[in-house]
Image (cartoon, rainbow, N blue to C red; front, side, top):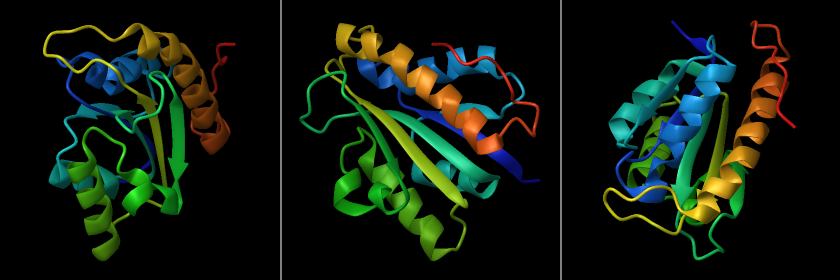
Length: 162
């Protein structure tokens, strides 16, 4: 069965800023309990399975591009492929999953990527201050995206935080 929208938080909850995707999904679930959301490590075949299950997919991950820590990225469509997408800390899995989905014609109709530049990836570390500061803005942007993409027709209508 295909869902209209799925949110996927990518990362490792035990690796500092790499836990961003997981923590954002946790907070979004409280705001939108009826929207399908999951977390994963970014492994390509798992992502491909998730792509097949939805018309629209929003990916959330920490990035490592050399930009200032805490900088937020929003990529869509062709921006997510190739050189412009080599910023994720899980580039190989994500890029591979996207290319495979294109080849197999299993790419969701809409694919968006939201990322935040990370600074701290040590095992057991908490989110860095820069990523923590940006997380509230990211959650607000994602909430707006959920409402914009669904227009409330699937029961996702909620008050978006300011």
